Length: 350
Image 1 (cartoon, rainbow, N blue to C red):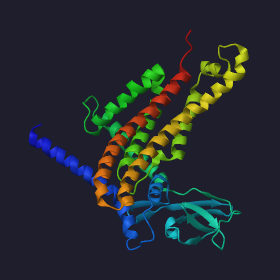
Image 2: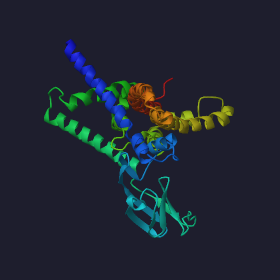
Image 3: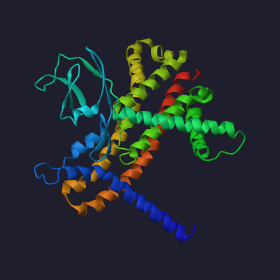
Image 4: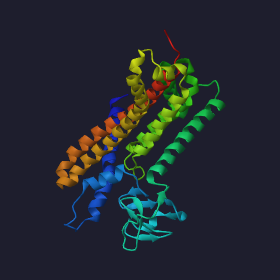
């Protein structure tokens, strides 16, 4: 590569980084515009950060622009379907089978005075932002693998090309570096699960890093998503366990008087392993989002553009680390899942 090409590449890279920071600043600048001329209401970084990392009944696009999402309420009076637009940003009450109000992105049944009606039994099954984001990740996952598998049929015996050439090393990496070393010759049975976990977590992590795409979400930083993935691992491991796995838990090769201590410890270990998976993924992704948004907030907390260079430099640095964390967390979750499966299916060795 000649010097001119290197210079152009660095220039494009610099412009992309600047664009990322500008896009990241959109919701903050929109907040400032909404409060322009109002000296009483100050910028609240906690409000902006919690709004981003939490779930919502709206899909935020840019600044004040948002798309209302479907609301599905099941109560003791029946099933109801309506749009979150009826709440007008939580300022209005919707008259359905109950009076509903949106309070901190949570739908509550309220009485005539606007207070929560504790006698009403309602269950929220709405299509929230995280649910929509999960569907988006799944659509990308299905689209990519259907396309790649089709290429293997139409280009049988030929060298990989395009998306196929990009995905094949990743699939082989999961097989050769994750599945085979940890599970052994039985790895083929578990490859679909491991590949699905790896690419679902990776795609969700990467989409969450794109500045407010489109509107921003924190899917793998949602405890409900990570606990579901952990429960899948828990069920897979324990249903795959052979007699030696269960013997090690309930009848280990130790003096019988130690069973009263070791059996409870082993049972706790069965639960704690997937629990650690859940917390690790949730904490790392959420922490990264909070740090990046906190650094951007410094500009508006100090209310000066002189803080911008410092904030921009640290945000670019953190985004680079977060890109590494996105791959690392997908790898760690998949590797530990394979390790736990391998412990459950390995044969007894003397």
